[in-house]
Amino acid sequence: TIGSAADSVATLQISGGIAVGEPLTISGIGWRDFNDNVGAIRSLSGTNSVSGVVTLASNAEIQVDAGTFTLTSGVSATNRDLTAQVIGASATLSSAAIATGSGALLMSPADKSLGTLELTGTNTFTGNTTITAGTLSLTNAASLGLKQRRCCVLLVCRSDVLWHCLRYRNADEEHVEY
Image (cartoon, rainbow, N blue to C red; front, side, top):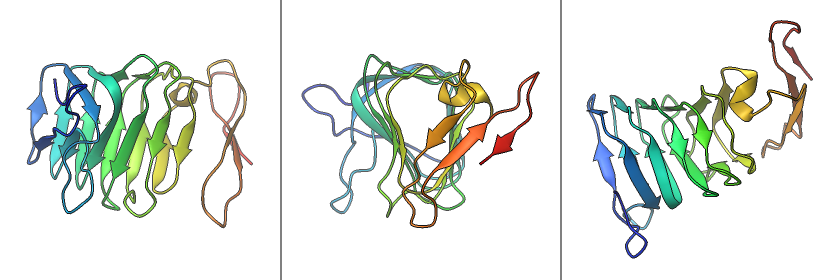
């Protein structure tokens, strides 16, 4: 368990090709580095991964400074928000299924998230998805829980894009962007 209800400023910091094989329970924003939080899990560099489910005990943050960090078994919680900070422009946070109930998925703040948040699993969270910076990569229609919907509106907080509608490819339809 990283962080607790009483103390949510702990951080698991990994770098250089670390593969964590157990499930983890995290909470909070992690410790502060130069007056800024660094996440309950912080991947500094290299290709790192957690193969066990990451469970959110409370709202929590994961930060990737550089390289690739993969959550092989995804994220689980009951109505908790997950904030992803993907710092470097070439950094990637990749996650299998995100099942956080009505919790939101946030990629912010704009001055820190320049990399890519890649959703690879069938996500079941029903909260908002807010991307204020960086890139959101979807590998299939179910990545945003769109299994039964044909179209989704994404608000992008950039001055040059107001809205975007996506229709995903499956067995009976082609991929179309509006």
